[in-house]
Amino acid sequence: MSNGGGMFSPEEVAYLKTLPAVAEATARRITYSEAFKQSCMRRYHAGESPVKLFREAGLDPALIGYKRIERCFARWRKSSGDAMAGPRYDDRLDAASAHVLASMQTVTSDRSPSQSQAPLRAITFPAASRDGSVDVRDLMIYQQVRRIDELEQEVGTLRMRLNLQARTEVERAV
Image (cartoon, rainbow, N blue to C red; front, side):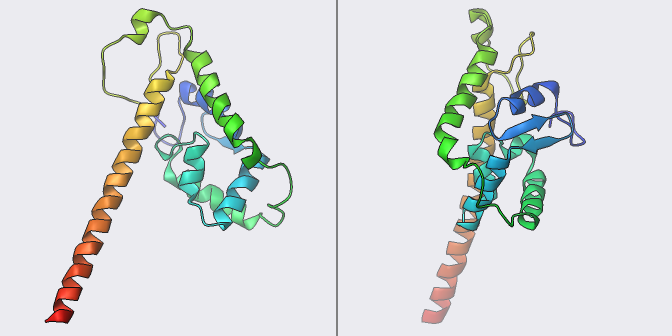
């Protein structure tokens, strides 16, 4: 949400609309497909992380925000009485992933060679060319940077737990 205040830029809206998990997107709102909602709830009840489910669908928390994911799951839990019925998003996941990449490649296919060989720069989501197209490479890099940061924080937390556990074991031995 590069515009701040919970608003998506036109480029972000264009990207969101290419995703099979998204039924509709505006500057302020995302409407998810019923199949995606049901799949998320089914997999969530099986123990999978909501953030992981959204990330797999191309909806990185860096783009839509962790709070939006939390609120979606809170709403969906309240209305998930018949979440196990209906179309299965999981069955289409591989095809959907291919669709996302194909959509993003179509959006960027009009770029000239000189544009694609531009020097590296600080990444802000989404990186758009003069004609407003989104470069899938920049999107992927942006998502990977966010994921690496998340994993580094998790490693730090786990190291602290290990150190605490080791100290406790040493104290017990003494």
